Amino acid sequence: MTVEPLDRAMAALRRRLLPFLFLLYVVAYLDRVNISFAADGVSRDLGLNTASYGFAAGVFFLGYVLFEIPSNLILERVGARRWISRILLSWGVVAFLMAFMTTIVQFNALRLLLGVAEAGFFPGIILFLSQWVPAAQRARTLAGFMLAIPVSGLLGGPLSAWLLSLHGFLGLAGWRWLFLLEALPAIVLSVVVWRWLPNRPHQARWLQKAEADALENVLQQERQQRAASGEALHGLAALWADRRLWLLSVLYLGIATSFYGFSFWIPRFVADALVQPQPSPVLVNLLSAIPYGLAVVMMLVVSREADRHADKRPFVAVPLAVASLALLMSLTVAGPLRLLFITIATASAFSSLGPAWSIPLQFLDGQAAAGGIAAINSFGNIGGFLAPIVMGRLMLQSNGDSLALSALAAVLIVSAGLALFATHRSREVHASPSS
Image (tube, rainbow, N blue to C red; front, side):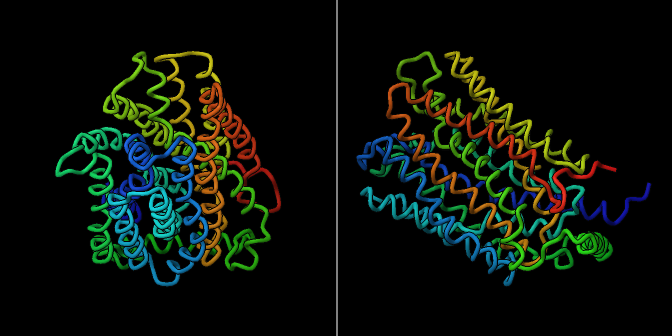
């Protein structure tokens, strides 16, 4: 049976491009959340309490949010190859410097700079993929890229446990080795991106001309269909007045708040769920990989099913509602059962990501895509700034862990409700059924 050029192009994209982008995001996410694994050592050596650690974890997102939109507009102008390479190099250098910090002020400043350096990476890749992947395959493709989040947690626990075990080697604390060695891949990969990453399909050496043409043609047809429908946004001026953008921004704020709440505090929740009064950090970090393992499976299943339907909203709302219920159930049990419910909550929340990000790509084009994707991600990542700080303060209270998990459950159920109103159409609430 003859394979069509478009099918061959998509197969090549999944084989050559997506794994590379996935690797970049794994490196980015590890550099962003590795302080969750280094928390004990950093807090002890720099004199942090739970609240000040939460502030340092969250201040990353202040720089990230402020520079997100300008960064993505620059990427749209100069191309992904140049700008993603710059982002990788700058955040790798800042992450490397964190291995040598000695004060709380330096810690906060470097976390802020790390956010500035990384700003534009995630929305830049989302914009980049919208220029490569037809709409019918975007949810699963985006989920494949964003699998890097749970995989980073899956790998981050064992990897961080090993790096922390280097404590004392060459006179350096284990957390310093953690920051030092996890920063190096970003610096190396910045060179690889500069030399290899193609901006558009026709620049890819691994695509035949017929394959690149087929891919470019279907993407052009989709742009023309969106323009003819009158639903597409192209320029920045109309973007900020469109209610779809703000609804999706608030929705992503809830989703980001939940999964950053999980990411920064999962080692603590795991430790509390263990029977041992003082479990070893190595055991805790290893068991912290369990929620992320289930998240990988659920992200693939939910996004593949979402691509079979025009209406993506149920594939966002239902996982978020399940996550909220699982968190509430975790408050009623202890030990391994609590870990089970936290695992279900984590995996369910993460599985909403692919379908959620496929919705704005149905109506954003050109500069509106660059600005809109960055705006949604920027607004959403306010949750990344607030979640560690608020959860850190809640955990200082009596019965603090239950308060923190209840707050996350409330955010998730509100987000599930919002997802039911999220639509790519500006003149009606309900998306049309799949054909």
